[in-house]
Length: 431
Image: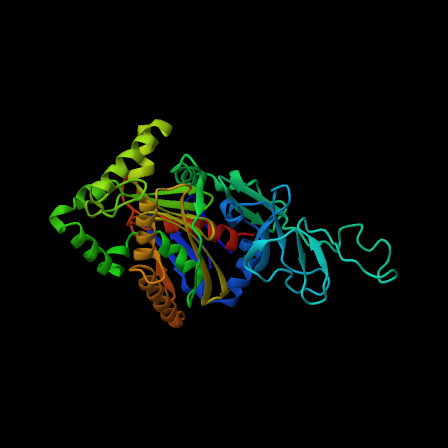
């Protein structure tokens, strides 16, 4: 267990920090151990708020979808009144999954194994011959679909918790709510998940994808092909003011383990920063959107929304990349060296078709399944996981970059990762 030395420093089994010396180490056993994963399931995934889905994915009453969240299969649905609900996707009878389709619209659900049926409020609705079950068989709700203990939403982002005593969602989100506000305020009409899911697996520990998702240090090296391509598209290195871009990049601790980077990159943003390759139409679209944002939220906030890029992790495993497109990504461990990843594109409701086309091109070009970034990142993470085979001889990762820097941390420092690991250590190494 962790031994506190002084405020801001600790020595634990897996995380060791000395702020005075400017060192932060994570033992690679945290990425390879079955014991660690079992403890994470108990102390993290069974205790905190976990992302379930976006309200726009259930547009109509009686819509439903199925999700794998924190090691459990769930039904996320709306009832006849349009109310949002979440159930464990497990039949009270013999445990089979009740709903096996990924999405649909239904007023009732029926288990294929023995035919037990439920209305879409989860109530047991099976008709049986007299004498099959006692008269009081279903009066206490024990054979209803089990509800997830907690379901709450913020700005149409729905979260669940398997801990009935978890703090309210808004309190848990802390400063991350402000970043979700910047995302949600990009449109006067609300935001929506674009149809389709990017699904894949990575043979690496889930925490490596947390780090990677807001690691500004790796981008120029790992994704050099993309940046060479981008600079060429923009007309060459003399057309990009890299110094000005570096001056606005930073990392922000949002509280409760959440963190974000904030920067300004040379790519175009559909809302709303055009590049010359988008032509006069792209410039006109940008001016129109910035004017609407300025009228609605004021000039300072409009600039934050339109002209800054953010990579945020909501602890432990929800990533919102608000960069050249908006990607919502979540991922769960199957084993210490295997995770399942799901990602979606988020966009303004009623977006101009040409702007939407630019957005989806940006998504596919960088973060999509065949983009410049995702395959690079998968290879990097799997390479690190293979390297951890030497954990007994080479046991420590170094996450010290920028610890002794004066002033705000840079986006290519590792302050945001240390924010994650401090919360991880508090929960994993505390009593």
